[in-house]
Length: 443
Image 1 (cartoon, rainbow, N blue to C red):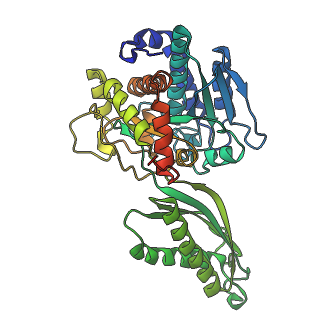
Image 2: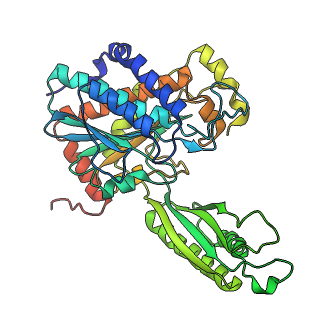
Image 3: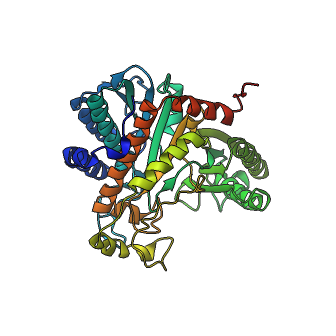
């Protein structure tokens, strides 16, 4: 059955749902719950979806803040990936264009309050249209915790969340609308060094410093940077600097690394070199090292058929901003990537078929097991960098809400085309198989 998607009355759908969706997004902004702690955020989304007729399941005891909400029947089965975790250390007062942390220890500096609720908008719009048009098909809203620093979707895959899904969609808030089909593979690794404590002045010869080992490892990685591909990135944070007493030789120290590269295999090989540097640092200092993988983000596997579908509706639904919103955005321009720009927002979508982002996402893990696409929608002032206080500050603005609802329209429209265009899903599946090297065209 064909539906004229360009004539769908999204204005009425937004009028019906926008207060509910905006309230949810603002509440999740206030909750600001970090990885695997998103209890209030996930509960709120589950309660809304259940009230709207979705059946809710939480199939994994290991992942208590992950869930699945299901509506509809039959195939195709379309998945929508919602996120709602915040970032540690990025609290900020709303709408204040200067650093102004709150008493909270976390904040939505990557916009996941909008992400999860933009997906909520998409599935609610889609459900209403499917009911009106009597369309078969199944909607699955996946509540995905811990995208930040933990690759929660990788654990969801292990727990069987995405079985039988025919195609999946995601999106992300940004300062420019466009496709999101390139992301860096990323190994997150803890290196824990163990030495021997001793009095640093009286008997230093008896000590073996775990902190020295960490520092030597970091020096070694700095030299590695000269010999890795330009697109790779390696960065770290100390999670245990060995204590606070300078007269005690540290017996334990830990550093947390992110090792990134454009392809999953590139990241794996680079991580092996970092592991060797850690072992060398332990050898030099007479310490030992434990190497623990926290999580692995796969690179995104583009699906050109789904990506072109997204670009079609990005062109149609990318938001345009009012003069008052432009004035608001200009307050944040000096703190972003484009301080010389005179445009508060970038209202022109980037319709390029591929786009580098320099970031990592566990949507990549999903894209490796089933057809998947993602995109970005303008929600923030021009040049606003993700993982920055300016993004937290703008997370409850009218522009942020406008972008979130636009994402809902794009998600719903793409899904409707898969539901109503004969043969399109088969093209999507063939594109996935080709990208995985599994598809062979008939002779």
